[in-house]
Structure formats: structure tokens, C-alpha cells
Image (tube, rainbow, N blue to C red; front, side, top):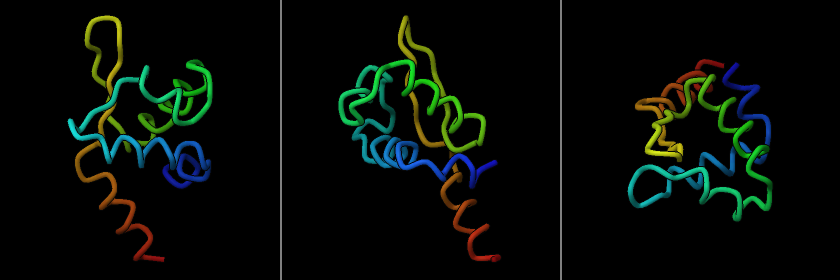
Length: 83
């Protein structure tokens, strides 16, 4: 499921943007512009990344904030090293 989640270029871009966020988390409202995608599409991609264990979702008021799941990228690197 992890590789399927990473197979989409928009999802890779989301991971990159969230990883680079100075605060360590990013609001879904800040992710639509850089990808030039609508909020429902971005939310769909984020849901797939959460389900794959790559991101964590935190609800703050009416907005959802996303951050990298601890150890997620290292786990993916380990999977690739085993190939």
C-alpha cells in the first residue's frame, strides 16, 4: 500500500511540502495552491497518505493539519534497501 501511495506525483509533492514545513505540520488549506488542485482532490491524496501510514492527521478547529508520521520515511527507505 505504501508504494501505491507513493506512485502518484501529487502525493510525492505533498510529502515534500509537508516535510519542508517550518512548523512540522501543514494545514490542508495551504496545500491546494502549490499543487493547483481543488481541496477535495488534495484531501483525497492526503487520506491515501494517512492510510498508508506516511502522514498523521490532526484536527484543529475546522481545519485538518498534516505532519509526517514518525519513522515513515525511514521505513520506506528500509523497504527499498531490501529490494
